[in-house]
Amino acid sequence: EYTDLLKVAYVASKKANPRVQITLTGFWIGDVLNPGEPYEKRIEMLDEKMFVKKNWYKYVRSFQKFLKEKNYFDKVEFHSLEDYQAIYTAVGWIRQEMKRNGYEKPIYVGDACVNPTLTFGPVKPHPHPFQMKAQEVVKILADRKNAMYKEVNAWYRAEGSRLIVKKTVAALEMGLEKINFGLMIDNPNAGRVGMKLLATINPLAYNWLIAGI
Image (tube, helix red, strand yellow):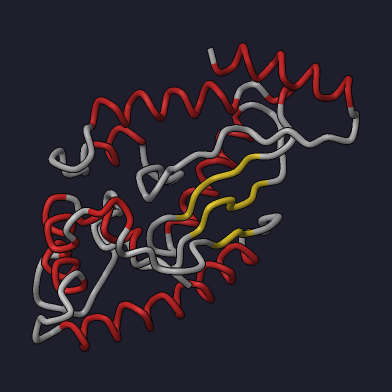
């Protein structure tokens, strides 16, 4: 259905304005797809409790199908929601698929975050210096009364400062067209859900509430 709509939209848009640029649907690849390894091997490395493997097989087949429609888009966009190193593997995989289909088009990061998404590798969690699981780190960030809050929060914010530089440099090195960062401010009260509870049941969701630049 998506590719059918893409073709209709591309033809109509170009007819209305030949200068318009059509971007393929934004990909979230994470660090799952690596040009140097079969994607089946990478998917099998996922934590089934957090990322359903059968869904990832569907995602990859969809990504591959979309990237074959080279006559119906001008650019490719992907999300950078994990450690900066995934930019290299994600772009490498996209370019590998483009080459397989006989073309090359501009790539950019349309959605980049600066906060370390600790539980969101998805193959390899974001590295941190604390002797605990990522979920425990997020719980501390949700509790200002915790004895370790100041230490963990200081690291978390400093890591964000490092990531905005690292991701920008990685995007430059990979020859990307642009990188777009968000979010600008924290939103810890979103959803009116108890923060400690949210950090416990869905640490990834809580990460986004304290993702401000």
